Length: 173
Image (tube, rainbow, N blue to C red):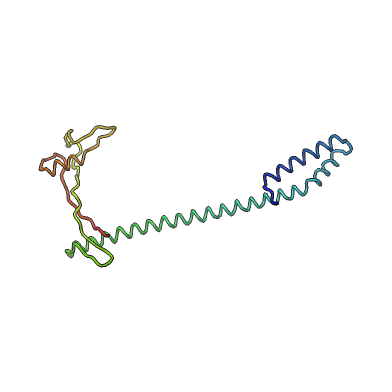
């Protein structure tokens, strides 16, 4: 039966206390002799404890190495993800630009559908201070109600400090 480090330490403590009590009560041995008897009696438990402690320490070192390997792998994966995100953005921008230049607004094959789509107009705030209070909501900070401004602008109203701007995006499904 394999004992845990805790069990071995408890056995050692109990055996030490029992031996000390027996030797103190007997009074037959002087202090150096008592020390030698205790050491001889507990040597097996000490060896078991030392062995188990070294095994636990080795296991801790293995876990530390595994942790470092995981950190290195995480950093590598983060860099790889970032690189892939950059590459996707670059290639998407490139494809979008080239489709615009050639006038292709839709392409498809058996696997993909590529389309240049017009995004809904978004509100661009030219001057936040010029926006009327009707289109502002006071909270801890000023929040401009872009959806209300968009509705007003789409209905033909003029909103000082804002205008609608249309843009396009590349849609790959």
